[in-house]
Length: 301
Image (cartoon, rainbow, N blue to C red; front, side, top):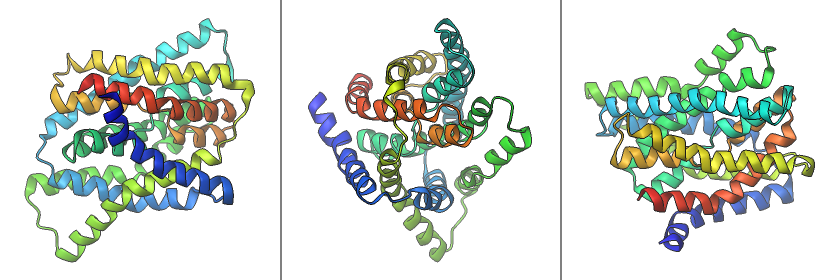
């Protein structure tokens, strides 16, 4: 079962990400341009199309979003206290938080859930991804900046995310039965189908340019272990009281089990919050996740 899951779910992703990684290493291409296209065009299309056509009750989507928020409420103070026990201070503590708390539920989580559980899982996985994205651009900014970022800046990061508006429009279209004009409908569908391939290419290219430094690999390994092993366990515990069962439970746990978010490295670099430590955590957790995520999928299936 383990080999079957790896071969059908993780191996296809590995081939695409690996090809993009090799291209990035060979040509030193900057992934920023494709990342921005994906963020501002493809991803909103994916969000709108899936939420506009989903048969999943909005109440269930809300409970899955609550799962993510409760996860943050538990994980942030827990990692903060652990950093204190390890006598980590200042930027190193913030870097550990960025590495452990924020998950790569977009580039990695969306295709994993689609391949593992089918098309119906995408709408559920999108809710997790959107919450993660909003949190890294608000909470993540504050953790990295350690008070240097203003509330207005963090709020601007959240409301500058087009997925926020795509959620509202997609749910409205679903509930109100909007009929989308054919040219717009086809354009949105084209954009949505481009999202996952573009995300995988961006992930591989971003991994190729991470500023790795072996000095931090011990702490980066700890961060990866917490992200890949402890995080899904917490999600599994939270799923029961929230009434999440079946597909919603599977998606919620797998989305918590994915590697550290590449966007955390971008935030860490922006505020010079030990970016090498965050990059090392992303790299190690991305490699180790090939085994751990396969095991988690086998566990929840």
